Length: 196
Ligand SMILES: Cc1cc2nc3c(=O)[nH]c(=O)nc-3n(C[C@H](O)[C@H](O)[C@H](O)COP(=O)(O)O)c2cc1C
Image (cartoon, rainbow, N blue to C red; front, side, top):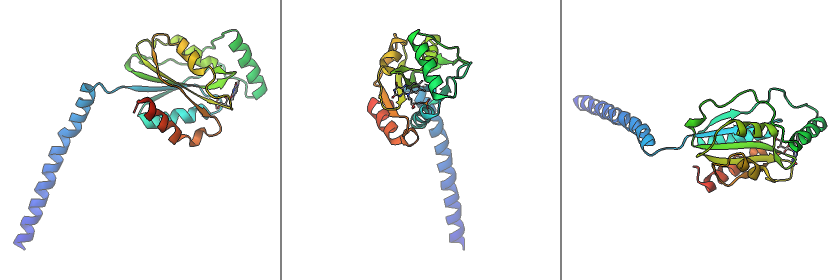
C-alpha cells in the first residue's frame, strides 16, 4: 500500500517536472525562430474559377503561410467566351483592372508566392495590378500558375518583369483540372526550391 503511494507520488512529481521543462522549451522555439530569422511567407493569388485557389491553399498548408486573394472591383463575366474576349483585349492594351484590396503589411513578408491562371499565355490582369501596386523589392517572389494545357508560358517571366528588384525563384505550373489533387506535386516543388 505504502509502496504504491510512493510510486504514485513519484510519478506525479516526474509529470510536473516534465511539464515545467516543456514550458520554456516552447518559448525558446519562438525566440529561436526570431534569432534564426525564420522567413515569413505570403501566398497571393487571383482565381476566376477556383483552380488557382486550390494550389494557393496547398502552398499555404505546406509552408504555413498567410494567404491573400486578389479580387477585382468588377468581376469578369461568367460566360467563358465573353471573359476570354475581354481578357485578351485587356492584356493587349496592358490594362490593369482596379482591385478591391491591398496587403497593408506587405513589408512583414520575406517570401511571396504569386499565383495566376494562365490567360492568353500570361498572368491575368488583376495579378499585374497587384504587382504594380505593391513594392516587392528585396523580397523573394515565387510565381505559379494553373493552366488548361499551355503550361507556364510567360506567366513567370511577366511576373518577374513586374517585380524587378525581387529575387525570383523557379516557378511552377499546375494543370487546372488536377489542382485539387496536386498537394504532393506542390510539396515536391516547394521542397525543390528550398522554401521548406
Ligand atoms: C480568359 C482566359 C484565358 C485563358 N487562356 C489560357 C491559355 O492561354 N492557356 C491555357 O493553358 N489555359 C488558358 N485558360 C484556362 C485557365 O488557365 C485554366 O482553366 C486555369 O486553371 C483557371 O484558373 P482559375 O480557376 O484559378 O481561374 C484561360 C482561361 C481564361 C478564363
